[in-house]
Image (cartoon, rainbow, N blue to C red; front, side, top):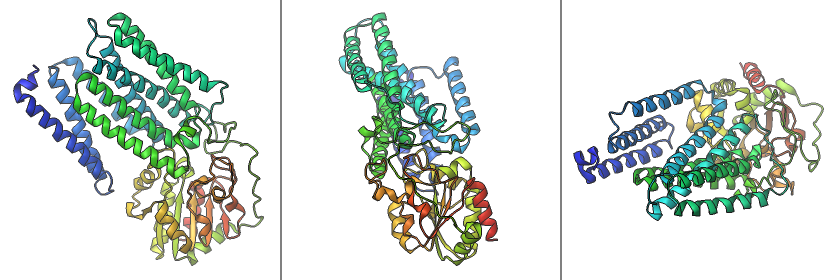
Length: 478
């Protein structure tokens, strides 16, 4: 019996765990509102720290120097990453953290499978095997996702002949290996489990390698869910049911978000993981991270009108408008234009304009990316509207200002059959009176479908770095 159990009893420990689980759920609920999000994040973090202390106390490690040293090392690295990483790099960091969560679960599961002596109960060993496979696959997939988001790897889908057969064979070997770990023990089980883990890691990496950059938000959400599922299985193997509960919360919320993201893109998860939803192409050079790759010749280029009116016309349109909608996209994040967008929004509100921000569910490279960037510059969360409400407001809007968005406002999603975005719900910017587009250039978005808005009467094109063009637009309204 552990020292903690002897001190407070089994019932007392369970009560503490339930209290901490309730705190995490309350923290998640608080995260749903901007005014309480910071408080919710801190509460959940404190509850997780409480779980760590309970686990250490339960194993008699509260006085262990190496345990506290490991905590200090991990906490220091996490704090350094959190302070150093820029907001534009947050998707890559989230991918890395998903991978580290999967790696931790895989290591714990491997240690349970490698214990010397007789084989443990079938249930915990089966849970450990599943935790090992899911955790290792999450690590491999997350490393590839992070590398694609950072453009260390091509963002386009990998095309490999015979991959479905290779993947099917790999999963058969993984299942056979797991069956072997169920009957072996000691060094042989440890070696076989390590081989299974390596194979799962490679399979996870190969699966995400097939996913295109446009689908990476869905992929990150799925990997987040899998890291929670792996933790839940590892917790079951350890007999730490608090870990099962927390892992289940993470897994369930991640899967729900994945489903929401797939619905928002009108895509099936199987098609995304098979790399069948993004046009095959050569990636843009690393020196131009916001440029878009060339695409399949499926869509006919949209001619631009020779006279767009430029900055004077855009400023005049905003002065004349009463209701204005701003649409941010990933290009805003790449250009770090959120400060300029805040300045523009302040100028418009000072002039008495009715203003809101329309945010598509898959704008950015991770769920909530645009919300975080805009909240970072103190834009009130109440100004953000999601796609359904935005599409009710856009037909009555006098002007729309698009900052670095393309696919999420592309009307071709309603007409261009056979293209990756066909059928995807979009923000109907074309329904507004005037559309002002502050994008880098006229290149298609990640889906590779030219945007008819660029050639539409009533559209004003302000091409160039979004931070500069939006700043110029705000200055013109002064």
